Image 1 (cartoon, rainbow, N blue to C red):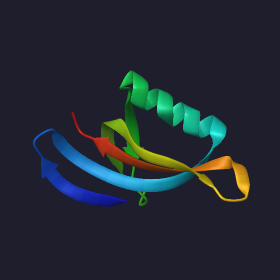
Image 2: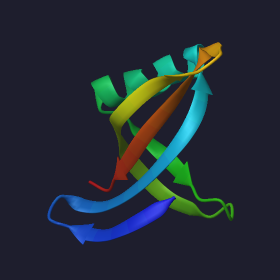
Image 3: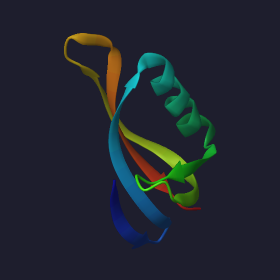
Length: 76
């Protein structure tokens, strides 16, 4: 997770993660519907509700059901 500080639209946090296709679709729906989701950092601390932005996704070589997704979480 990387914290890029405060920008005009709010605070943004970025990460890249691997999802199976079912969970990647859930993430895509959060993005399309502009759903605010609770974000928990790697220490287990809540960062609050954020808007999900999908920056990119690619299939994982040799694993047809897996996608690498680059995400940003925006404070609104």
